[in-house]
Amino acid sequence: MPRRRHHDRTRLPLALTLAAGALLGRPVHAADEAAPETVASLQSLTAADLRAATVGFRLQTHAVQLCKHQTNLPGWVVQDASQYREDFRVAAEQLYHLDEGPAISALVPDGPAEAAGLKVGDVLQSVNDKALEQQETLESKAVTTGYTRLIDTLDDAFAAGPVDLGILRDGRPMSVRVAGARGCASDIQVDISSSFNADADGKTIGVSLAMLRYADTDDGLAFIMGHELSHDILGHAEMLDSEHVKRGLLRSVGKNRTRILDTEQQADYLGIYLAASAGYDLDAVDRFWRRYTHDHGLGILGDGTHLGDQRRIRFIAAAIAEVKAMRTQGLPLVPDYPRFLARFRASTASIEGRV
Image 1 (cartoon, rainbow, N blue to C red):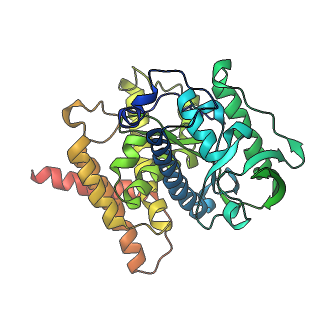
Image 2 (image 1 turned 90 degrees about the vertical axis):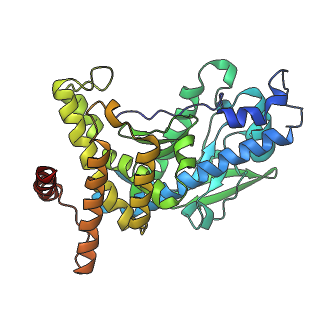
């Protein structure tokens, strides 16, 4: 599978940067006390991490029967000091003890890690009696490599079964066993970006901070993340790579456009089922998508790799209607994309023929 990409947090969006503006003009040293504005900005970012992790955990555990690649999910957010630029690193060390090693910055409520007794600020020292190496600092220019290695180590351990963690809490060493909950093996990541975007690369689901904040309810966020999880479940990244489909500047040309469009429709369809199976409100999903299309739709600027704005609204509404009908009939929520697509195309042709 494609390797995951974990971004460092050396650059924050405008709103967070302005909040920390007092620190930007001078060097900051580990002995300094972080400014209250910087601490507040970091806490806001951590809240975004927790929200994405919580929605992702719920989707992944409810969709596990659809996933070829499964693992045991701890339900946490782990950070390392190497991800942060110097001024925010001071705040991260102050809040989460990252100066002592990688540490837990957030816990999914009632998730396996919290149930096992782990707490925010617990420093991870060993995994199954094997010491974790201190990750590279920002100055080493190996931030992504270091943090990726940390996450790889943790993911591999949880995939194999219950994990015995050696932690440091308030200077005291402790041991905690975390079993994890069975779920789809995709990592969740909040990307520090002002773009309204979300993506998936086969292993990692990324959602931008701007998109996360725009989704004013978890129902809307669940559809966005469910769409990306669907790409991973269906193996779209590997499939498009094997077919040599270009996803850069040439994505809208010929076969590239057709194949990408098909994967996007599949992800919209399955994403509705994932949100429904996890108990999210599909009426709220519909309202969110109509609002998003009004505010951020591409209109005539679309490149053909996604359905046009109004057609995509109808597509998603039709998928929601199918799920509701299955519930009314007491049927299990089993997606059947070819059947749905045939019905949607027939109904759309009828509608467009009357316009």
